[in-house]
Length: 397
Image (spheres, rainbow, N blue to C red):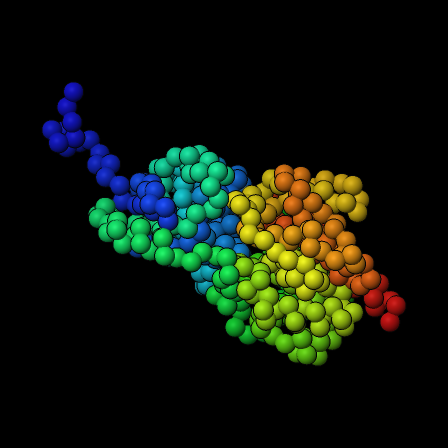
């Protein structure tokens, strides 16, 4: 049998990308997307669709995403499925890890190959590793800190990469919201996408909603607008006085990245003042976690987190089970919730808290992503639950 040295027609399989874990474990693969290196926390996502929405979700800031589904990139990318509010901004995942090479796109909505899209957004990619083995490692040992590196010439300073992975402090105690929040106030009126029509506009709003941006997704804003809301988005550090001066019918607490306890140092006092005012309040993901802190509970770092579009959640207020989209590495510790806080939703995977409501005020939140994008639409009803609270509040005034 001849080898590659005697048969130059054989391809060169020299690794051009590495994933270097903090414990020194090294995965070799083939690079794609942007060149260079990035450090973050490795998680795995079990979604079978929506990789573009996942990679542009600001909640993934500081993370390297491993997709367990092997066929990533096969429908290409387009400008309609980006979830960052600022289309030119790049907050979201720092890196992406794939099993197979990216195939040419095969979808009528595709406008760009995933590899070119990753390059344009500065996201480093790696393919060709056993993602099942990496997922099993995460399930066993938890989400590791790591460096992902891509060098087309295959030359790496492995010692330096190991040092960087080992010295990165990790997400616990890290406030990442300043990386992803908007820099100024703006309004939103775009409504959800409809087949053959695209996105619509809300021109007859019934409610005035202020959304605090901890890393908000576009589809959250669309669903609020679709339910009759004029939405004003404000930066994460906006004071309660400024929020309440806008006379909102409701306040929305958005999703976002990082440790809720760290962001909560400045966000929780604002949330507490909003709650005290009696304004209906709805939180998602990081907003849910910080609402839990504001109501007297605590949050904890999860072993492997919840990342995917197939998570079963039970609504304890109705007894119904919904399949949800999730993305979080921290959770509200339900054992710390005070007596006046009702647990409304639980994960049927691990019984962790997925929703709370205040007994004596129009305040509630969920841990998962009811706006989906990607994911099932089982939980869209929560936006109507929010508008029902606002409608009742206005009727009682």
